[in-house]
Amino acid sequence: MEKFYLEKPSLKRKEEALEYINEFLENKSEIHGVSGLNNYMDNYENWLKFIEENWNREVSDTLVPSHTYFFIRKNDNKIIGMIDIRLALNETLRKYGGNIGYSIRPTERRKGYNKINLYMALKVCNENGLEKVMLDCDKTNLGSANTIKSLGGSLTKEEYNNESKTVMQDYWINVKESLLKNAKYEEYISIN
Image (cartoon, rainbow, N blue to C red; front, top):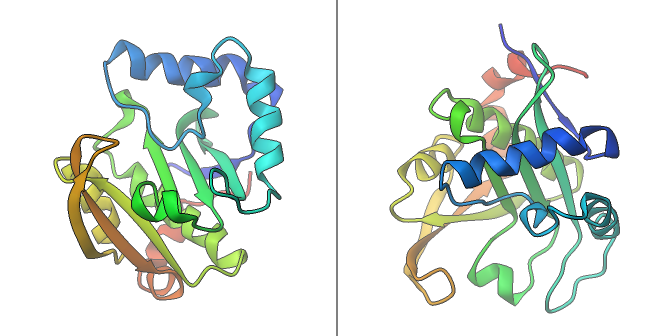
């Protein structure tokens, strides 16, 4: 059975992290849930500083405290996905982004991995005292919508977003309720 764990990004994963982003670019796939790593391709070290600063950041109009993780498959020690957990919402994130952003590399999609990734993110949310979290996705991104709904996401809003130029759907998840109902994912979690 495959096992997974969340790992805080570090310098030792630099080449793998850049390769992860390059896979999205090569596949012409949208990049989400990477805490802006795609904007730091020439300076991974500065990205590490940025996400470290985000760990305990004060809420502002542009930034909130957030925890970013690599989603690692233990069997081959490979970055399969990423998750960005925003511990607060400002007005911008209430309109677009929500509490959790995630991604799975294009060559590893449609294997159920993102459900495990989101479940593990909800565990982090619970540890940080978040009772309900907001996630959003493009209405045409059926994979993401199905992942959110499978972990208890309830659709609360659907509207056109000028920033993304798409119809966005907002979902809310009750964290404790989801963790209880989806405890089956515990068997996939490894203590790295």
